[in-house]
Length: 310
Image 1: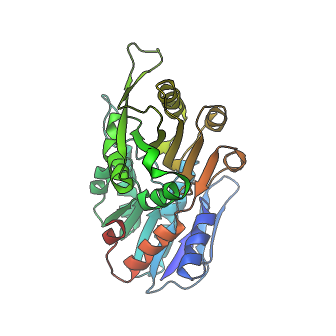
Image 2: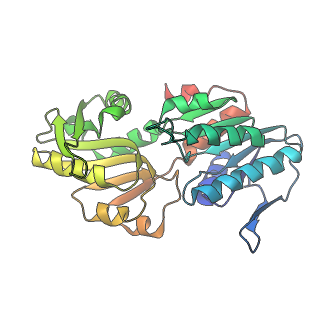
Image 3: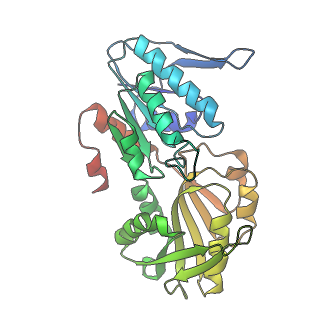
């Protein structure tokens, strides 16, 4: 087994290798003057079980091309099996045609990864679970819930915790966390009466006096989380903390979160945190390296991965 990484999140790749007690594979991923990407694998991979750790976060197109070219390089170097490890799967939010004459980009990206030569895919908290079906190769969708659950148990009195889904679509994820914590569940009902008007937040459930934990897979602009926090505090919640797997945090999201009423935003390192994220007073990062490392180890040894989440 050998583990390699592109330029997207080398810190996570190194942490995974530390867990596995293997060195990070030597590979050069660089650019020509016109920004064309060039990859050179600098060690023998013939007959090896290769894992490429490369979340396709910002800049998504560059990191996706790095992944595709690395897969091609490994295939042409006679690797026995190539697993693309995408802790964050970019384009996952484009999983259906939301209106006429639009693409299903998640399916296109799945096709590209398959055609490049990947034998299997490993990812974390897909935006929509059915994206696994977009791949014609084995795909493992890992869940960050065990990591988030351990963190919650070490920071909160569970007798006063309430898990909250920020929208109806996230109820399954929130219910799974509430079951693990053996606590109550609430739902934020978002409604926009007219285009261009701010969303009206209604809370389904009594949050009075509760430490509310918002759970979701992606935080991008942060607007929904901040608005939901305001609504819950207005209805008597003691505090609101958000637990999110993928901290995209684009544009002014970090500033929006730091100036909000959120007690804390907890994200994983599926996307390499920026300097602004690391310096924010109410944003904290927890690592997924042991979880992904264990999944890689079990995959390499042909053991069960799903039992990690039983």
